[in-house]
Image 1 (cartoon, helix red, strand yellow):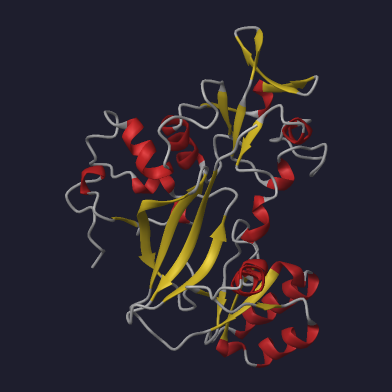
Image 2 (cartoon, rainbow, N blue to C red; image 1 turned 180 degrees about the horizontal axis):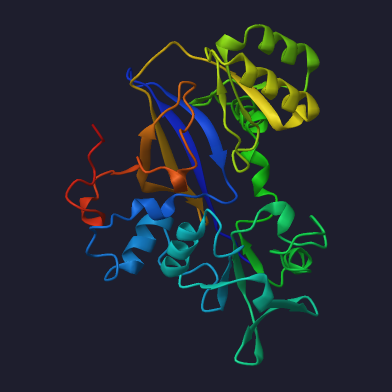
Length: 322
């Protein structure tokens, strides 16, 4: 069994050049397809080179084995990214109905036969990946997949459990973990996060709501954020009722000093035989709390930014948006 672990980090870039980590996605990073310029003429000719520059892969970590990309359904928000990864990594896109587990082995239905699978690129969330050990009502997972992975019979990218750091309340602890476990000072700070599970903290936030932004703890299940300074108190009261019903789903962030020049940058990297930072990032305007404006697959104002690799994009590649 081998592994490859792509991930994405959202960083707030302020006009003074300072950086702050906002969100992490080490399980189902989205937006990779946005790095591909629609005017790029060389992608079809240089797939291997692009794969090397993006993932640090000359060959594949799974060797010559058969690999599939597990796609939830044709209407999911990550469909375009899934299609791009399928093309880039030469992985057949499949759904759960095309896979089966027999004697611990993952098999693919093909022309009436069942072919063994060596690796699964999963694009299904942790709790939906395997109804035998996650949500039993999952219709997009493969029963027995996690046990097969644990037994070393199949490789899964990204590995189950990687979605834990999507939670903003946990990701905010990374700088302190670096200090405690590595004995180093983090180069970038994480955005301050206040958990709303504590009734005392929750009461303090709502008493001074104009100083805070309120978001869901898991950016993969977004709800419309509320930003302090809103004059609509009715919406704030409705939000308070939703939070009181399930406070574990929500966090608050102190609003920074107003700064209209902030940008949100999404960086991508992968970990296989060492860490590889992708040479491109995605830039978009930040919300008032420094977070991203929209789900990246739905945001039309996203600009790819390349570092010294204009040949991978069009003539504007490598330039920071005005």
